[in-house]
Image (cartoon, rainbow, N blue to C red; front, side, top):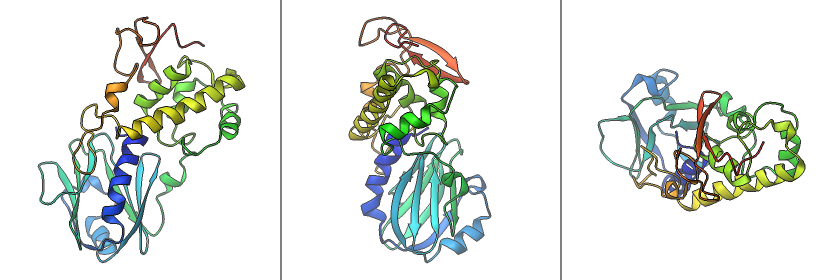
Length: 263
């Protein structure tokens, strides 16, 4: 699933192309992409102008001249500045200049529309790149569970997924099963710094293309070439040489270094 760096990359690319564009028409080619009826969505969106785009966690929110258009890419969704249709195209937005296409192989992605931002977007937690270290520490100390599931909890921090949680915890030297409330101030500060540094570097490299992810122009990211532990069980830790282990935490495969990452 595309995570914060991938969504940020897409938003930065789409913003200059879509800001101010008029939606002439919309075609939905799958009933699964919408939570409501296709005709109601078409009636709402046709004739609306795109004002601005923002990233909110793993969501792309487009502010219209009236209302909002929100995308969640699910596991394999793509937003492409492309004409025509592909075999996995689920929606096409015909604009006054060019087209925006939503492709999705597995069809877990969703498009939502309405006068307000969807409730599930409103419930998201703080942005990992914006939350201060002091507020991050205050929030962490309210939780007693393991640190990895907490970082994956979108109502705690919005945008981290399995890839970047593994990478962040390795950089911070924290075992994924460490209890959140047991982290001292120094380790919390180190974790906050690791989150900002890993996500910022991943954005510079336009995200991680593990399987399906591409940006709005169809280009792959390159941060997967810099992964330290994610998807590398059995390989030597780049920091100490100890074989990377894989365990399951909260039903999520988790890669970490048993020597570098301490409880």
